[in-house]
Image (cartoon, rainbow, N blue to C red; front, side, top):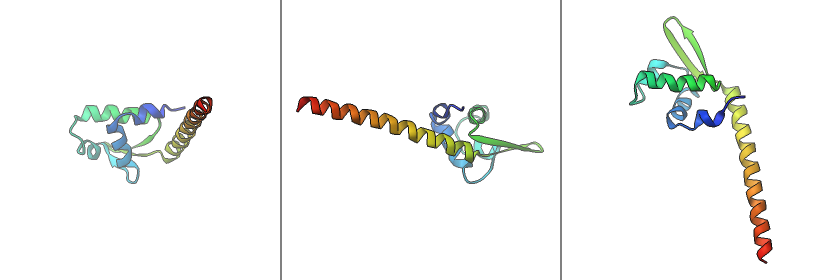
Length: 102
């Protein structure tokens, strides 16, 4: 199980996910879009790879990255479910509180 929250908690990683969502990008193409160093971008890519949200393909000396659509969709659905449960609990608590005051 991946830690989806860890992966999406950083705005740079969210931007990387957006970049590779529709088109495969090389590491160099990704680095050019940021004002941070290549090693810093590489660390973000490593986290996304570790959490299995992106896939890496090597061709010669180049690494290509793309969204792992299946894993991302699964984690997104889990996130929606968890948020739904939290909201349901909070609304239930609010209802109980309001009914106590009536």
